[in-house]
Length: 565
Image 1: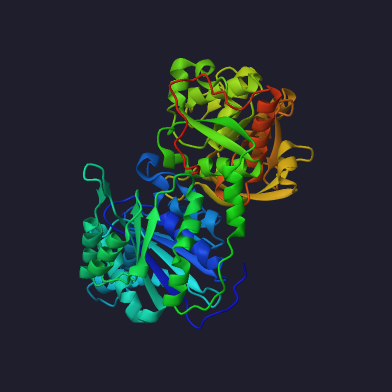
Image 2: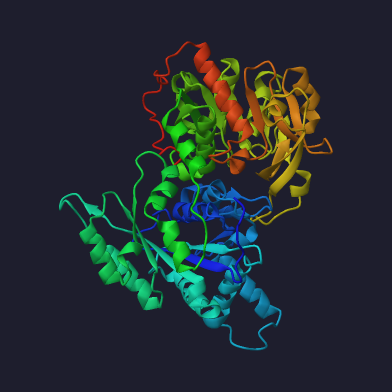
């Protein structure tokens, strides 16, 4: 929706969290961005993370979840995935800063003599740098900047960020700043009641810092009574209409914007910031939820990976599968399966009964052979298969070993002395020693082969997709693979770097070097995910199944998604 009105000064919304981590600040911030965009405002979004790592690129998915990659090659927090899926906010490396980046910038300035011999301190130098990164998103075309502060109020590492945003309202005027605090109102089952005291303490800590929240968003399992809302309002010094209940969604995270709309959060924000806008139009979002609630069939997809037990490690993969389900009016039952478990028990027991198998990206040797076995099972049983990044590389390893008969075919990432390096290090990576931000990252063009499955999905001659890898399919083996039935259907514009491989004789066997999951939206499924799920639907239909049977693996339960959470 185009902005109807431009304002003389960009408004700022700061979102903080209290009581406990993982309250869903990213999802809430994204929902606010969606509501404001649907009122005709131009929005930019940003997350400031308090950890000292320069970026999440070298952090374990167990610790941090997936690394979300932007077009410009920035490795960012997974919350930026929520921002892109919910809004049209243009995201760049200025959309995610860490304590490490802030301090590194200040130290570099000190080394260059920019402080003229002054003592460099947290206040004002670190806080000024934080304020500067917020101001970088301001321009004449932006009505509102939403800045999410990672961590929890009370954390030591969050204090410079909170002090910076406290000062910010003095710099730009209180009328141009809004503070939203997300907090927890826990339900004690033994007592049978909600407790407001954690919220009171959290807001008390924020006020001690010098920030009086304008709006409280209260996460809760149970509906908050009028009496409890009045208590929160009284002790936290906010009007009762600014106490917004955000009850856990029973069905889908995509209900959150509508729930906040019902609580008139968008109206409250625009009133407080003196923004005159029309009502938000959420008809597309309502249609999305209707389709999600009313699938015409059910299918099951196995996601075989190294981090299967950790939901956030493949966050965008799971979201993209759900988007494709919405597109195809299908309920997608996602079952994460440890690739090491496949090594121990075999694919027959674990993967029989699935309508599709997906191998996601990743790094490291652990579980590789389980992925190879899973791919062979999908190929030989003609089960729709989708490989992403490492999923493409393991697909090439499997095909090289079992079809082309290249004994010991492998990736040099895992076996430097392999006799058949079907996967090898990119030429541009051979002299790189630093680990952070040094891979082939961000948007890269890809030319599609006429008549390919990929071309049929995209309906384009050339595409742009986001990458995050150091290794590639060794083009030396390209002709051998083609002679045995695996074709390269997408390449870099110069034709040298294979980006997509397919098996045309297979019902649907597509593997890509890039990460299409980063460009999927609930309102617009990514073409490859849509094609994969359509193939899975076709397989289920061809088997004459009712849609109620389950895979034979009894020990692995479906991922407990909302769906998409």
